[in-house]
Image (cartoon, rainbow, N blue to C red):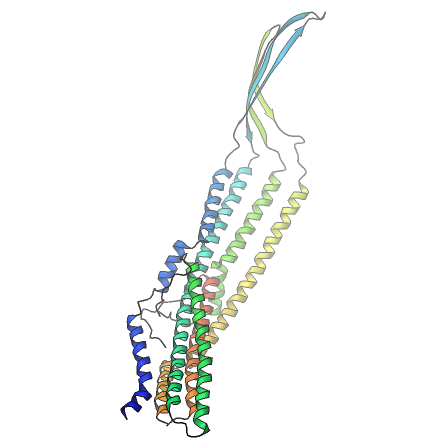
Length: 430
């Protein structure tokens, strides 16, 4: 009798012991916010945007400066003759001048304004990337935790089928039904092993993505805390639209580009008048006489009026294109707000249908079915279906929650609002 009890419940006790030991020995994972902080410090792509901003700032220091003065020297030989062509004298001739280029009034200010818009665009690009990076890290962190939970549950259910199949193999089969039950359990175990391996690959993929985002070695292994963020009711749609029109990085970037194109049009019109050069000059010759000349020189290109109609028209066309792109971007942002809002509401409604303890109840029912099937009180069809439904319920709950989180992160990205509030309590694993 004792040997029969051991064969019936020994594998189950072993599985429970291993699971309890692994849960006790599992280290405390890294929080999603800690991963975000690490990514914002070490992400490789972030350096590109920071360097772009530094380059734009350096360009502003050059845009408002006049060109450096130009020095010009000439040296030659002079020979002077009288009217009868006799030699009067011979000597050196030289000239020297320093000229400073001056732009037409208002031109340096326009170039400075264009350079300042480059700084604004680079700043927006950096801020947009940082916010997008934070959202990706948070979503992938939850994805990693979800994949680990699904892999764990799939392996647990598969181990139950394996342990039970080994017990049934040692029983004396009475008829065809027990043999078919063994085949059912074996086939179900193989299917669940495949799902568990797929979930394990998903764990590796999520971890690699997080390591890539946070600038860590791709093979670095770590765990994520199960700090599920709260999913609040979203703000009203008109409030989201107003926030998107004000805070959205795409719209702010397109608006800054439109302003910059306006400055370029004004600069093109200003450049119809050429720059001119002014500076002192001196020259002398030592031939038949010793001559010295001192004066002021002015240089400018001809004609004074530059025909730049085609250039102005081309830049004006680009300004109109920038205006059209801003309009299209605004409509696209509105579409993203509506789509993300509807997606979030749909997922939130799905989660509202779930009882708070529905996953734990499925887990308890699966354990209860496992015990009673061993005693012959539950048929194989109910046992197999309940174990599979337990795994499906865990997967559906985690996937729905991740989709809701992705929609909320999309709303954050589009509107610039902080909608996610991280939970301070570590949730239990499903």
